[in-house]
Length: 87
Picture (spheres, rainbow, N blue to C red):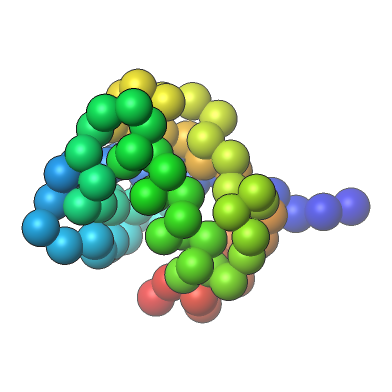
């Protein structure tokens, strides 16, 4: 049985820098450089999360909020492992 964690991510785009900070145990605020058009900010969000968590981009899924600044994202790691990889 595989473990998946659902994170709430508040996205600010475009931003000067790509960075993140934890708002609470399961909520991230992420700033991405890509503009909010044609899914570019979502693509950068997925790529950045995958790189930071050392997983493939195909394993990161936006469940809700494709056109919203607040998204629910599925990640195939435990919450503890996510916090270890993204302190």
